[in-house]
Image (tube, rainbow, N blue to C red; front, side, top):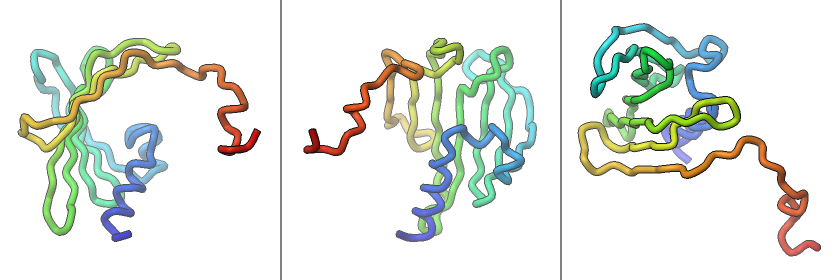
Length: 136
């Protein structure tokens, strides 16, 4: 595995995202401006990860949830810009989650879309689901 792939895996392993406990993770967060994004007021934040990857977070000014994330990182010596647009926020287990994600290269109309129908928080699971395959 190359250094860039390893860096990407480490960044993706941050399940909470770079804003939660950002100082402890070594991330730098800067307020940039208040802007308009598709008719909504947003706070634009610049997040610099220890790896050098820069993420631009656009937080809804009313609900403080991210509605857009732009990422700039280096892959094989080339700067790559991507964006993720989050929407259709709904409450699940007392927390608001985006039920819609659209992501891909920045400025491209060719983006992948993920839509969730339902999010369950801490559902009951039978112990049998964690048994080794083939074992009874």
